[in-house]
Amino acid sequence: MQNQEIAKTFYEIADFLEIKEVEYKPRAYRTAAENIESLSTDIEDIHDRNELEEIEGIGESIAEKVAEYLDTGYLAYYEDLKADLPIDIEAITSVKGVGPKTAKKLYLELDVLTLEDLEHAAENGAIAELEGFGKASQQNILDRIEWAKRSQERMLLGRAFPIARSIETRLQNSDAFDRVDIVGSFRRRRPTVGDLDILATASAPEVAMEEFCTHDNVKEVLARGNTKSSVIVSGGLQIDLRIVDDSEYGAALIYFTGSKDHNITLRNRAIDHGWKLNEYGLFDVSDVDDVRGGQRVGKRIASETEPDIYDTLNTTWIQPELREDTGEVDAAAASELPDLVERSDMKGDLHLHTKYSNGSHSVREIAVAADELGMEYILITDYGPHVPTPHTLDAETFDSQQTEIKEVNDDADIAVTVLQGIEAEITDEGLEIPEDWHEACDLVVAGIHSQPSNPTEQVRIAFHEFPIDVFAHPTNRLINEHGSLDLDLNVVMETASDEHIAVEINARPERLDLDWQFIKEYRETVHYVVSTDSHMTDELDNMQLGVSQARRGWCETDNVLNTRSLDDLMAFYGK
Ligand code: DGT
Ligand code: CA
Ligand code: CA
Image (cartoon, rainbow, N blue to C red; front, side):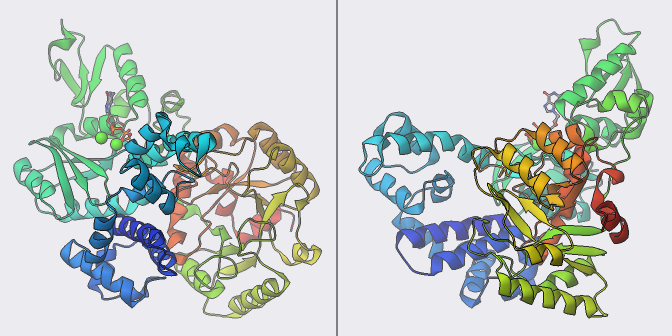
């Protein structure tokens, strides 16, 4: 899986071309990078099928570059650009406000090659001295550098997903491996992962390790042994592989799934029984003088499977998404764990963009794709006026969209029901959309895409005075880019509840907004919807990411409105 690596290379090419003031091409490479980054399929498979040019935004010339990279592991065009300007452009421009041209200037004047160089230059005051910069922009860089560093250290779950799946499938299909599971934060579906942890069994561990460490995708081997190895794969992600004994697999699964705090709570539960729990098993150490005398001291009472261990500890098995030490062990002991919502419960998607705003596909294309995923209904929500983007609907495009939706609904070959909606901006004036749009829309989704000075009040008033059905990406955070709106969520959630407005769990990898901790906190107060906010058909599959966050927030089917049939959904809204 080299999707991320290629996307990153194309982002860099776009930056280098922008520095050279080449016209049009930077945009083309950036679009290609965005589309490749969001692909859920392995780009190598697409190349093998000779279908690179069928990827949205990829024409002949860019397809050739992808092919060259995949075939040779090298892209001459990129290497030439990089030789001219040997800077870590991707890292430096990941600092918000530092564009490619600024990066070039910082290189020429201050020899800034890396993010670390940039941080030093800002800390020692050199940037403020530069013409056109000053103290304020230097401080701005310092403030933003933490976000940039984080984005270098933790990969979005949605970006790690295809990489993880591809490695998992490869190892599962290999004769050298028996059992294979991805554990760690990935298994718990944290919104970002520091690395991927893989647990496996193998009859000949040396052979399995050899295969793992020498695969084409491995860029660097950090450590290599017979039971544990760490490598960096294409795209920069670290993968830790541990091979354990089959008889201890359950204990290792629990240990390496974490979280660390969940493990500590479990271990304390074991200690209360006079037992010892570690990565090798659950041991009765009541007859043992020194429990520190070894890892496998005492009498082994459970270790083969996770349920064995949880059962013996007198709790039910705990879903990995819940293992964050927020009360799940006590709930499991009382048999009161939630019956978590599942991907297969989802009947609709209530936030989708088409070509009428900045999506890549038509209403029909989105409908066909949603149909294939088995959705019962979808809500098309292109941007209304005042969303800060050039791609908003106007009277004419709104009408055309309405016509197209009707055509698709009349097409007997497409089973999914397409609803007309809108993603409206909440401004100081509330929702500034034409009166007749309200009538035409089946449901209205509203959100904030700017930085108002008092968002809580703005939201509260809009909720009271305008017919809003779903509050989109409530905090407007972008993981690894910027933080949340300064919202009083208590007020927002109470008002949403009073006004019968559902709160969105946005499934885009960089949003996953509302955050799971708040989902859990407010699940008794509001109804949620999980929506993909897709801008292309490939993104519809992000539903699983959104659902995983609802699960981390302890949501059951009842907590999530779009698990309901269309009739029941509309009944909720009194429509
Ligand atoms: P990450 O990689 O930062 O996204 O988060 P994790 O949770 O995957 O953490 P990682 O990769 O350092 O370790 C994987 C699991 O191994 C972790 O979830 C729990 C377990 N583990 C690691 N170190 C410790 C430790 O010192 N104590 C305990 N109890 N468990 C640990
Ligand atoms: Ca990890
Ligand atoms: Ca790890």
